[in-house]
Image (tube, rainbow, N blue to C red; front, side, top):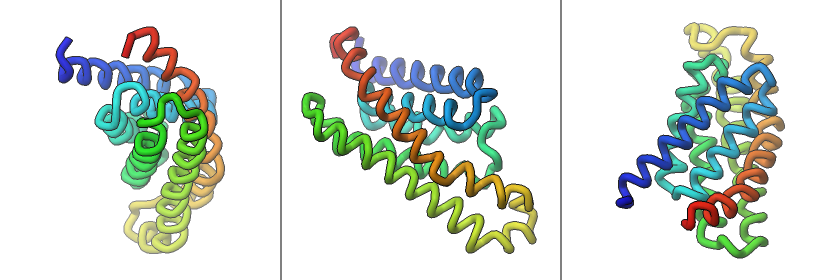
Length: 181
């Protein structure tokens, strides 16, 4: 199979898996759904490469919004940036060091911390704190979301990124071996 077709196929499979996981785990709550999403993001970048990981990272928040998982359209760009940061850190630290467990562990924890930091800074600090009154006044943000967003984009994001990244680090080598990649 040529490289472009393989990339398209792998990315499409990751997106399909992500949509299915978001749909079926939505009733189980953010911890389960977020962990599954982060696992797919991490497997995408560790197995299929940077561009596949970034594609999944940028498309998944749109799908989450369409499925009613992302609380407001306002959060979609923030989630895109958080996901992209997660994928980039994993790629640049762990992607090149498949056999180096220490580098993979550093990448895993770093990627989770960076994603948490990006989402916290944009959603909790910028949207809910700095811009909240303006966003409420122009109708871009609903008052009840000021209580929900800090919870959803707080420490839970760190936990879901750690869980998903850990699962992916365990799965990616098995996938590579099974598919001889």
